[in-house]
Length: 440
Ligand code: ADP
Image 1: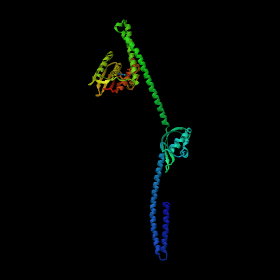
Image 2 (image 1 turned 135 degrees about the vertical axis):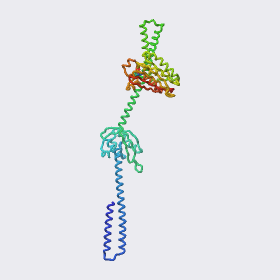
Image 3 (image 1 turned 60 degrees about the vertical axis):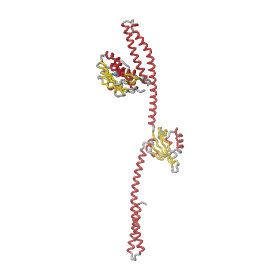
Image 4 (image 1 turned 180 degrees about the horizontal axis):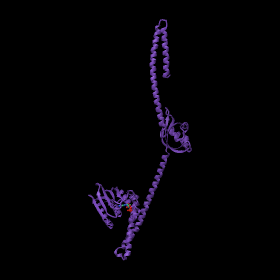
């Protein structure tokens, strides 16, 4: 009986009691003490009933409020369940769907009300159903399975790949009663994985091709170097006085053979170095040497080149301790490349070489010129192999576009860094930082 009905009943009893009371008082018969006592007891009982009724009403209101709160909470959970990013399903032991959220209905492209009661196996492609049933029978002995990847299908038999996690629902005795399924569509993830795999394979093939190319270049350069050295050697011999019976015209021809052979040999050396560096096969021959002496010698060697172009060549060596551990030939190569570029791309003004200590362990080599400079957009490219800022201009100056790429790779191999600062028409500054002692 609810509180309202109870209150009505109490009122009826109360009314009946007052009537009895009135009748007893209006009767001409003398009042019986027993009746009097009974009436008083009835009144007391009625009072108590009133109190109980009020308490019941209060409890009733509290119950109503709790029920409303519970309903709100249930709705909230239902929404969370429905709008969860993954599909959630509850099935019985035969795989019949008892509960499913909206995401599940969307995933299988079916209206939620039709999903309930369906067998989950309906959403497995036919050729995989046997394996799925087999899994269902194995499931009875397991507590849970995580991230099992299977093929599933929508109601219209559109296949997709899914990752599922399953947890067993058990009754109080521990017997399996059903399963909770979490199903996630991983088709896109799988596609990305496949693309990544293909890219990785492509990358490996590219690396292999690069290795082959470097090997081929190294072999070719080596094969070319030998006859080139012979041509250079014999043509230089021809210029010696004891063989020199040539007319001035013939001598000039031999001189051109020598200079072209030198040029070609330098190119071959560059290609050889580049391919070795690219294949990671170039090893530094570390030794202790005097860097100040090396900088001065290299500058002297290139002095006549600068002089030919009427450029002033400055050298500033400010090394408190000039002894370094590095590959002297390779440091020489770096300096020659930077210096000859500076001279090559400067028509007026000066070229300056600087060597100084940055810290006790780091040394800076700086080559500065007042030449044509490099536009900001081209600065990133000049260290890339075969890159020349202005092909036409560079044709005028000759070169392969390998010099800076070799310098960059060598500096890195030495654990150093290279930077360039330049403005078109205002000259360039190439700064190389090297450790005083290059690690083995
Ligand atoms: P290259 O054999 O063409 O000199 P490098 O790799 O040494 O090849 O240089 C790449 C390009 O960078 C050059 O072609 C030139 O355009 C630009 N460059 C290099 N050094 C300088 C410099 N000191 N001043 C202006 N441009 C330079």
